[in-house]
Length: 67
Image 1 (cartoon, rainbow, N blue to C red):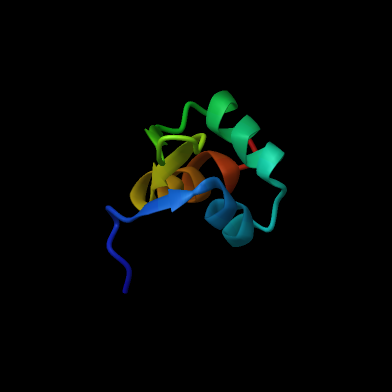
Image 2 (image 1 turned 135 degrees about the vertical axis):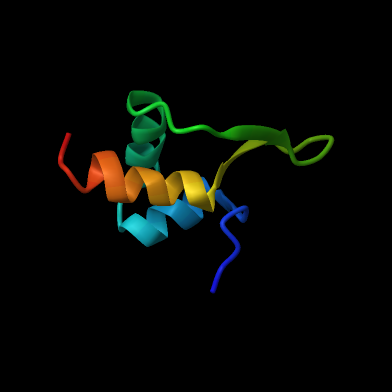
């Protein structure tokens, strides 16, 4: 069993939902899915992370109902 506080990247979420990364970013904006932006290093860009529990709420709520 996974920890609901696990942080997932856009890439991981795309794999779970079998969608494109651009689509995942649109879902985050459209459905106001909470996320954290974290700078990964001095020259690396910021990465977006979503908590597993927030993704599960989205899947079983808005996304599953086709809203």
